[in-house]
Image 1: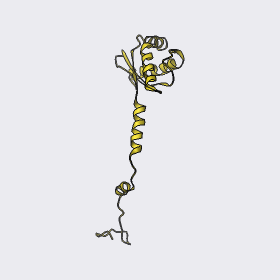
Image 2 (image 1 turned 90 degrees about the vertical axis):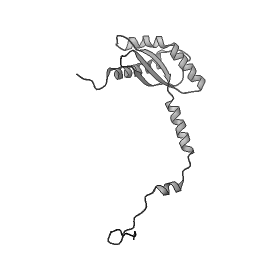
Image 3 (image 1 turned 60 degrees about the horizontal axis):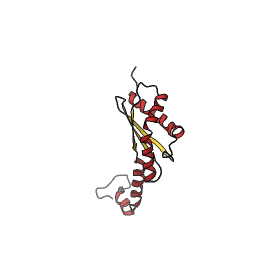
Image 4 (image 1 turned 45 degrees about the horizontal axis):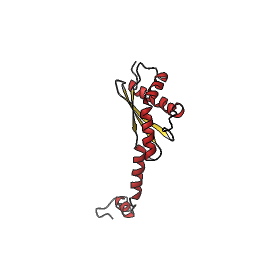
Length: 142
């Protein structure tokens, strides 16, 4: 029976869910604190590598500390995932900081600084068409 999604997508989804739980309850590293969110997990088609994108709320120093803590806890996290996910081999984990939200906020700020001109809106409006009393348009627009 053919599956709708390849196995790599299903494994990525399982890793994402279990890792979110591990970050919330199991990992006690003081560097991994605050709001850490698993944004996405990409697993290679041979299931040997997993790239995990995390978003961290806080200062640049907080982000560096969280990433350092995650990289050092990578072996523990992989062991815990092995207990929770039934696979012959758990993929090698690589953590990466996801800056999508920051880029989105920056883009919104840039767009907010663009002045809204009524003349621009007027030029984009379609010109009105004049019709004669019978509903026909004259060549002169009358």
